[in-house]
Image (cartoon, rainbow, N blue to C red; front, side, top):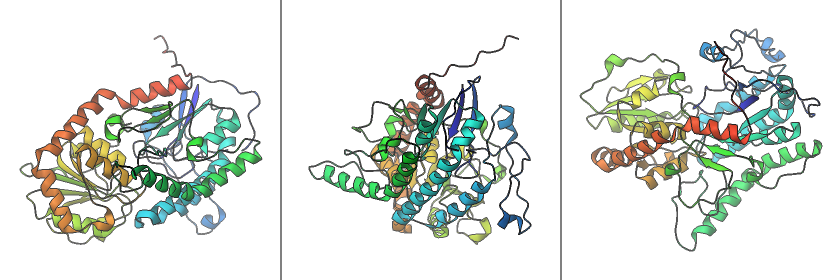
Length: 453
């Protein structure tokens, strides 16, 4: 059985673009079954393979080349690139401003990105999947068009959820809002209003997909939740890190972090500069939404008031020299070995990304979230709910608020104790193995036979 992964998250190798398929639009006639294999859409193709670069870029005499980590090819993973290669530049064109936006503006841009990404998937994915003779799909929840492509091709698919669940729920605030789980008679009405707003923001995306479904002779879907898999929706968030009492479909499954520690690429870091006599504070604003320089300055200035050592991991949108001199002489790295540093950390200050939250909990590290957009406000709300940290919306970030939060989290043992309790739950779940079992069962996939030596 050959599967194709359609995911975008730093729990897996980072994608080069929004649509790494290659694809058309008619169902495959005689579908040929293949032995078990996996095609990941995140790592770039075979080492040294070149793209057919669009003319405007060739005219500038640029030489474009994409490479893949050797460990992926050694594991037999393949990567399919669309013919023509224009998807790479389409995706770059819609990703650039994301790191400089906040709140609802950033959320609106993300839905715009979803629309453009889905247009590429609807246009290109069917042919690519047919040419690779795929038997089933694993589709990211944020990739709303993937399920329609599977339906068009007559293939089963499973929804993989690497963010907080995007399922609209009348009992729980949608994850894009800075809202706690509320009680009282007015709480359901507030959730309904929030859900209406999200449906409005996603209306263009749903209309785009339904137009293509009509062309393909498929019935339209009504609402966001209708685009997800009916056999299985597999989330990496543990049940203990979500609000209780959620009204989710029977196909929804909580598991645990999709983290393969052995697959992490080794990253150079000045380990000799760490001071074991001081608590370590690890600071990261993610790899995409990290273009807000003032956040790093406020965090560095505030941490300098405490007897701690600070490590700033900037990600891809900022160079260390762009920040200038910072108080407290923090260690500044463009990229850092996150898991290794978290094992040594007393506190994580971050953007509210779910992957960093789960990795911090896996290392029993309490957190302070500075959420920017998308599901990050919901992660901050769950830190408060579980008692594993504090949250300060990025537009409310001030040194005085951050100072109070650091003093409380580092000075109060209950945050570390709650993180430790969740760490025990996460370690007992075996998230990757559990997710694989659910996928195989839902898609009726059998493991390949091991050759006899």
